[in-house]
Length: 177
Image (cartoon, rainbow, N blue to C red; front, top):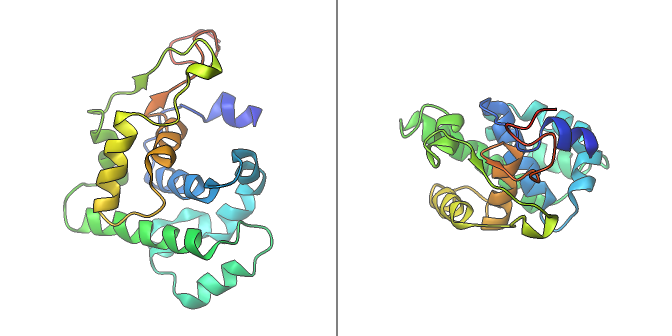
């Protein structure tokens, strides 16, 4: 958890594969603790072919059944199918020319700028906001699954669109380490 906080959480990400991976991992977390996902992350990434978008988009029933038998990952049919649907939604969005990449799509909500909040205590960190509601609505309209406002908020934090590090945290954007 410390490694995730210090090196990944709230760090701007512009890599489509990693943006997709984080979307899937955030969906996997629904109803569970983030530490459960982090603990299984390496095996989840391996089982999902490194979250290669085109590969996951092509998963068929046999692959879903194989994943459901894997004891090293979170075995939820709905969450696994959501990853497939989400990969297909990303490809559809790109193929239809709406956006050139997942990166362009996610960051367009903030015009490419990181949203830096200034919480002074953990109690001040939100679990959703107007931005996550907007992103959630838009993603659902485009066919994405497991993208409610709370999941989207965590996703925006996890991909660095939002920086919610505490003001005195050395890992906050702009703070010297």
